[in-house]
Structure formats: structure tokens, C-alpha cells
Length: 240
Image (cartoon, rainbow, N blue to C red; front, side):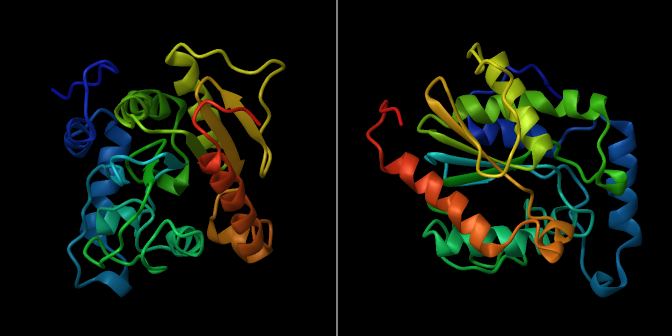
């Protein structure tokens, strides 16, 4: 049985090992494995990962990027979050422009991409049908976010991609014993909150729908990255 106790993991390696073996959500298990078996025609010759997708990046990261969930034919295929889909293309290109990645492309787990000072994970670790996890599935996965939070000892900035990631970040921070801002924290692109030792910064999610409609542009993403860099540039413990 998978240990889903939020206090049960002490390192990123431990939490990622538990994630890749997780079968807590029957609907997600069935869907991710069906997608991996049926495949998309463009990837018919590839072996899909078809399992929960762990976080990845720099274990000493000061920046933690949280997305929604792996894409069915992206992370669920490649085994790395935000890899092999349009959202990942947009995100990693922005991280490259900001100096946090060594290349703008992200198409396979062995493509040579390296992150500097950034760790990336998701609120739900399995690809969900219609990209819509249930409340119970979020609840089952949230302990893994809490484990990431504890293991990222140098963390200073949490960049939440989309309202769902933002809301889950707030829940994890509250569960860690930190007081949330009052009045209630509201989501908005570029909105930032200081919560304990962390700066929580919100961004629209780099979904294909958001980027194609112009709700989120490369310039807007770069401006959020400027906010992130500004926090990192401040002495630890300094306020805005």
C-alpha cells in the first residue's frame, strides 16, 4: 500500500518514489493506463509512461512551479511534467528566457533540459479525463504537494499556474501551519501574497486555450518571471 501520510516523506526522492507507485484514485488509474495503451496516432510507436508523474528539477530550488495535472499525451506519455505538450513548450520557453532553464524545448524526458533554481510539480499527478480531476482526487494528491514543500528547503517563491494550482497551494500552506492573508486571497494574474517565508505568485495557466486566445501572452509570462526574479534578488527574510 502506498504511504499517503503527509508526514511520511522527508526527501524529494522519497516522495517521487511514492508518487510513481500510487494507485489511490481508481478513475485516474484506469484513464492513464487506457491512454497509454490506446495512444495518439502521432505517438503510436512510442512507449507511454502511463503512471503518476513525479515532480522534477533542481532539488535546491528557490522557485517552485505548480501546475494542474499531466496532459494525457504530454506528461502521461513522456513521464515528465509539462513535457511533450503545448503548455510545456510555453512554460519552459519562459523559464529559458528568464535564465532558469538551459534550453527552451521540452519534448522528452531525455531531451537534455535542465532547470536551475526551479522545481516543477502538479496539484494532481495523473492525467485526468477531460483535464478535470475530482475533489477527492485533489485531496488524495495534496499530501504529495505538502511533501514537496517540506523537502524544498531553500524555497522562497511558489508560482501557481492557474486558479486550481493557486487554491491547492493555499491549502498546502495552511496545512503547514502558516496563516493565510486576510481578507481571503484572490486569484489573478500577477497577484502576489507573502505567506510566512514564501511569496505566492499567481499566473494564468499556459494552456493552449489561454495562449492561443491571448489570455496569456509570452510578455505576460515574462512579467511574472520578473516578479519571481525580484523576490529571489531580495535578501532572505526581507519584505517588499
